[in-house]
Length: 329
Image 1 (tube, rainbow, N blue to C red):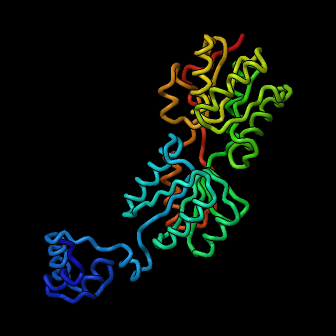
Image 2: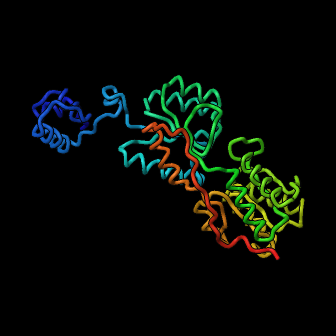
Image 3: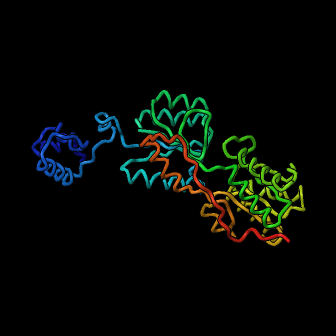
């Protein structure tokens, strides 16, 4: 049987208003009354309705999260941080898988408005004007995670250009000069273009030309890593190293090279980006750029709920050295 707030009030011998004040942390009752009401709630197993409470305190203790792919390892780490921090603060999370589909994204935004969420986290996708306008109309706080926008919206992310610059520089320091790039989606201003700039800047700092035959675009996924590595090797057999713009692409590249009996790192070195669990599971274990995805998720919740003056946070990155990059002599 599902009990109501009226049932709790009747059993405890108090008014509905008193029960409501206790549930919402408002004053106006004795310690003894609170203890009695909480005892009745426990005995009945009463679960207060978040939306009903929100009508009183204007908060539903719910956060909406929109992201393009729930299943990939990048998303799982960010979501893990979000859900852990939300749970710690007694918030619930509504996860919306947009699949980078504009129509679906707009439908989710309307659904989040109807659910009266307290704020929105927008992850790893371009914030289009129609999305921005919809959130502004909802008058809700929003934080961007692993992405930025031309709008005045708080964000938290790593410095993609600097991270790739540091990664490619590490390969250059190991003696590599013929370095290919498995880039992300062509034209993507959020992740692909900054990482491309980092790659180009690192080569130029060593006086090397940026050669288009050493650049192949993909979609950050495993399959595009396989096909991308194949294309790079065929376009330039002299390559001694490949920087991949995601760990999944790097795993795909490793798979292709293994199928062709090309030894890693003895013949070709491979480096990834993100430092997801996949980087630990590849054979050999993947050297990669590490960005603190779990912490990024946790801090995004704090940013959203506290709405502090700090408008953006650039998270630190580092190089996790494993076994896929060797020195070139």
